[in-house]
Length: 174
Image 1: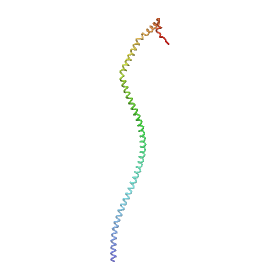
Image 2 (image 1 turned 45 degrees about the vertical axis):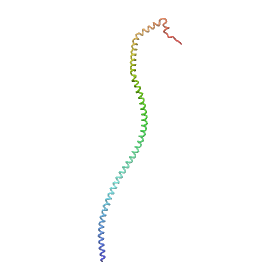
Image 3 (image 1 turned 180 degrees about the vertical axis):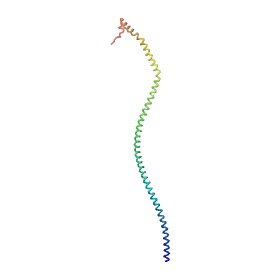
Image 4 (image 1 turned 90 degrees about the vertical axis):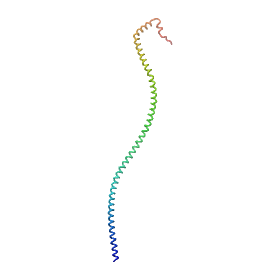
C-alpha cells in the first residue's frame, strides 16, 4: 500500500506535469495556429502579389515584343539610311568634282574679266571713234546729196566727150 500510495503520488505528480505540459502545448499550438493563419494570410497576399506580378510580366512581355518589332523596323530603316548615305556620298563626290571644275573655270573667268576690264578704255575710245565716223558719214552724206544730181549730169557730159567712153570702159581681157 505504501508502494501503491507512493506510485499514486508519482502518478499524481506526473499528471500535474502532464497538465502543465498540455497547457504549454495548447499555448504553443494556439501560437502555431496563429502563425499558420498569418502565414496563410501572407500566402494569400503573396498569391495576390504574384497575380499582379504576372499581369505586369504579361504587359512587360507585350512591351518587349513591341520593342523587338521596333528594333527590327529601326534596323531596316538604318539599312535604308546607309544605302541613301552611300548614294549621297557618291553624289557628293560628283558635286565636289563639279565644284572643282567650276572653281577652275572661275579662275579663267577672272583672268578674262581682267583682260576685258583692261580693254574697256580701248573699246570705249573705239566706240567713240565709230560714233564720230558715223556722224562724219552722216555729215558727208548730207553734203554729197545735193551734189548727186550735178555729178550725174557731169558724168553724162563726160560720157559725150570724144574718147571718153573708150577710156572710161574697163578693158576685157580673156
